[in-house]
Amino acid sequence: MSQPMTYAQALNEAKNVIMQQAARIKSDAERMRTQQQTINEQGVRIVERENRIKDQTTALVAQTDEIRTLGQKLDAAVAAHEQAGALIQRQDQRMTSLQENLADLERQIREQSAQVEELRREREELLAKLPTQEDIDALAAMTALLARRSANAAPVAADLRPPMRLAEAA
Image (cartoon, rainbow, N blue to C red; front, side, top):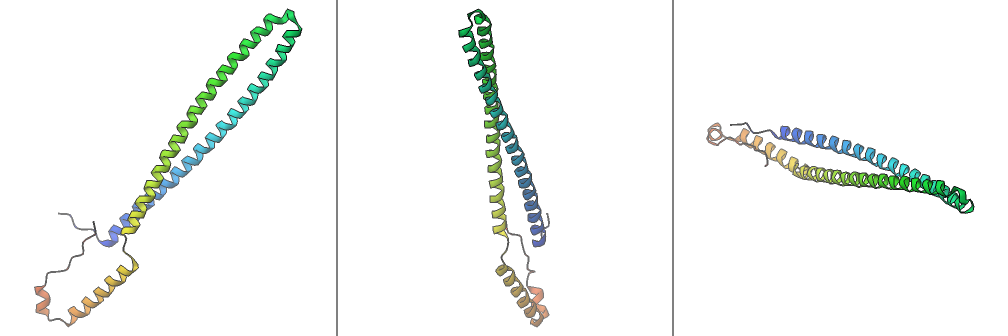
C-alpha cells in the first residue's frame, strides 16, 4: 500500500512538471525560430534564382534577336534556347521542391504550435488545481482552532476519535 503524498510533495511534483514543460516550450520556440530562419533563407535563395532566371531569359531574348538578324547562327541559337528551357525546367523543379519543403516546414510549425498550446492549457489546468490563498488561510484557521480545542479537550475523548488524515485531491 503506497503512502499518500504530502501536499508539499504534490506541489513540488507539479512545479517540476511545469518547469519541464516550460523548458520544452522554450526549446520548441527556439526550434521554430531556427526553422523560420531556414524558411527565410530559402526564400532569399528562391528570389536569387528567380532573378537568375530573369537574367537568363533576358539573355535568351537578346540571342533570339541576334538570331533573327544573323541567319547563319540559327542552329546555334536554337540549341542555346533548348538549353535555357531545360535550365528553366530544372529551376522550376527545384522551386517546386523548395515549395514542398516550405509547406512541410509550415506543417511542422503548426504542429509544434498546437503542442505549445496544449502544454499551456495543461499548465493552466494545473494552476487551477492549486489551493488559493483563501484555502490556505482557512486551513490555517482550522488547524489553530483544532489545536486550541484539543488542548482544552479531555485526554480520554481525544483517544476515542479516529486520527484525521489529509488526502491529496485527485
